[in-house]
Length: 149
Image (cartoon, rainbow, N blue to C red; front, side, top):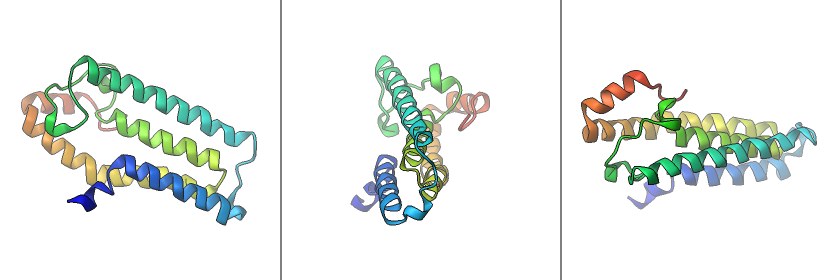
């Protein structure tokens, strides 16, 4: 049970950042995004961070939680009206921003790897829990709002 906690999405972000640092310093031949263009990563990460705040504000507004097992409301407004997984979009953009900032081309594979892992491992489990919790309401929501964008 504790091993699974090593692979939760926020932990995957931390692993990604550590890998980006290693790529940057140990494989400098792949540091091909020149200054000041790599600073675009700061803007992307900052935007993702701000968007995360909007999503968390909605959780507070509806007095619910990001933990699906404890979720008592299905949020459909704001970012949730465009994507069923706005938090994962934020996390993906955060990793992308750090990848660009690192200047290393190998780092650019990490946001894609994150999206693949989340899509294959976490999203299906979460959708099953949401279906169990909200039934037809969630089925209707799935028909109207795409998984990503």
